Length: 235
Ligand SMILES: O=C(O)COP(=O)(O)O
Ligand SMILES: [Mg+2]
Image (cartoon, rainbow, N blue to C red):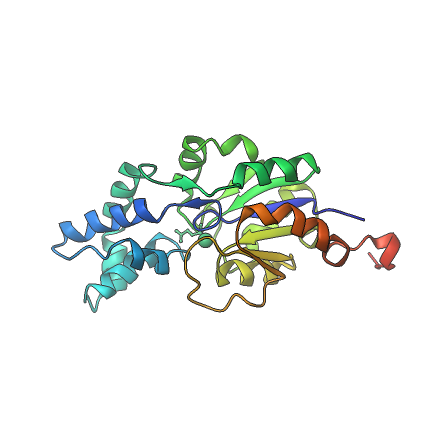
């Protein structure tokens, strides 16, 4: 029986809890614009669609009817602030290192696919000691399209020399599920992250956190990654 050849992790809400630092950066940006900071709880509900969308959600919440145009204009201001608070309070979720090590020991390649701006992905992974675990990572603006488009997952599968169907996406949101489905990749959702704003019940699995991941993969491997010799799959 096979194991996944490649496991791709979402970043915010899956590998790391970055909401406090994102909230700080959004708060500083809005304060400079004379608007109230939305606070961490609201940020948790808005993360996952990229930084522009996050800023736009905050500006709309603060009552700006021109939120999306204003987010575009003030994007670099937000990016400066986020660069300043990238890793003040951001933490790796419990069990992540252990799960990554267990998967690597089983021979899986590991990668990160996030909608966070690409320029901040590597500094964050390095600061948290995660970078050496991954063969590759892609931020939301690394390619012309981002999750929920399939392109970043397909790019990472190609980079690892495998088919998307032989990989696994580990995420926390509907965006991750849609990207994986579009790529033809199995997907499991970890529920330790941000509150689900959209349905996540059509993932292949839902787990409370990392501790359950290696065992879940092991139990599901014959259905999710059937061995062509056993299943008669035509390649
Ligand atoms: O929305 C973002 O900035 C990042 O979100 P993701 O890591 O969950 O893709
Ligand atoms: Mg996420």
